Image (tube, rainbow, N blue to C red):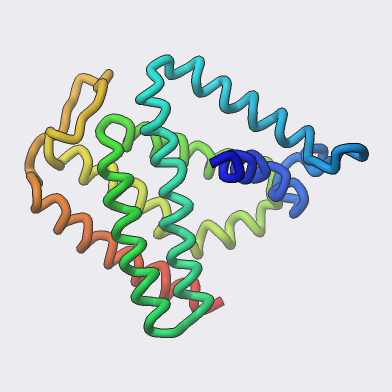
Length: 202
């Protein structure tokens, strides 16, 4: 568990080292050989989340979404890189499971997680050259559709999956269990195929 926490905090360091984030965060402490500035930066962000969302279970739900969105993307990467039927099948099944976990994070946190992800996409050009950003955005339009689609399914889904709803609208119950699972599976299948075909052309 400790290793996973440290790994998440090194994301800022990895991005900075690839010139995709503030270069200063790629600094490595000469004595301890750790990305000290990136660790401090990530710790400050984590503290801000806890302050802004005082309910700890809600923080866990946001964390769940933040964990499984990258997992979902990595399953597509696995399929694209391996290009073998068994790996494509494994990535496909894992993508559906990741999508279900994001959905089960409950309304309105599915919406909150999507908004955070979309805001990060908007802010991304600040750290990346414009041409590279536009190129990546064009190839990964499926990512935005995926997040928005899961949020809409969450809104139309089973009212059971609600936790500390601070919004005036709740899930409409159009897709009740187990039909919501079927809808997500179909939607995830379409997105997986779209993302696979698009990125395989690279």
